[in-house]
Image (cartoon, rainbow, N blue to C red; front, side, top):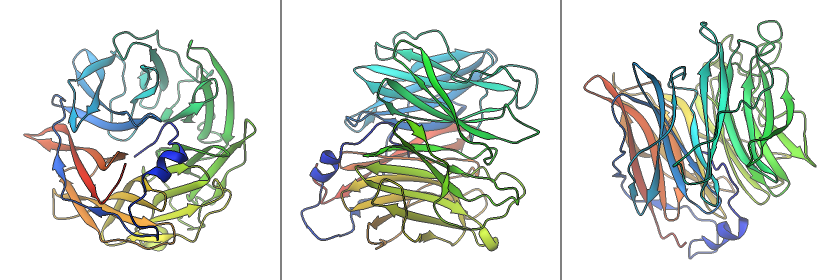
Length: 400
């Protein structure tokens, strides 16, 4: 779902299909990939380095607290699980997903949520670094400088010049002013810098995402106006400064509460593709748009799905002229479909594929591309206990 580090444009250009005109990729049937998670397990998240290394992380819990587990993807299999974090105060939930992120040279960044007070939304973001592939970890550090007993979370990361950039929802100004979007940079030695405000009023609990363009990082999130319009916005970092947010599309979705349904973004060079869910005018649908100028402007949205759309989107580049979007659709009771659809830069849309199902409605499916495969992960329920499942989908005619 999220490229946390840049995919070099040369790599994307090298993965063109044999044809030169814009054509749609073809997907083979999904194949299950066993995940070494226990039960119950919650909130899988996929992350990826610039070199293509993929990591799957998830949460488990018992009477001692929460555990952040992770596994690396190796030749079509998930390796044995490794425990990155044990935290007696970990906030384990379905929507606000922690992660273990590869940041190069065998180093990893873990981020998770930890309660700071006995209140429903009093928790902080914590981070830790490993320089030995997860064998040992640094002491936890919070990227936000406030000590307020308020909500902090929905973290996204990206490669920064002097470390790893983080963007998160920050509730230090609630309830008076509302939720904000803030960012900071974490150096490899654990030092924090550049904490800044990106947007002073955003939707309370929708996932964020960040991608790297040729012009710099671009963050995507659900905004919140004084009139309760909650459309999708982007903020671009130019010359080290985050710019005021601008709408990807003026959907005009007015909703009095948070839909817990964030957007996704992916980029290479000056090309950016985004996907999101909206229910403006009581018409639920998944949309996508592209930019060829590093997110300065976006195309008219293309409708991906409107029939029974639940959202919870993912997005991944396939090659230099096509990308793929994943989302959820409601079905019969206890059966919600995970869907895929490919698109080209000029707006052509391929057939809709069903790649899996889940009995749970509160799920945020994950999507990334690893060479000639799409890898997806989500949560399902077995014997009344949640478990992480994964599939891979080979892209036919794809050349790496």
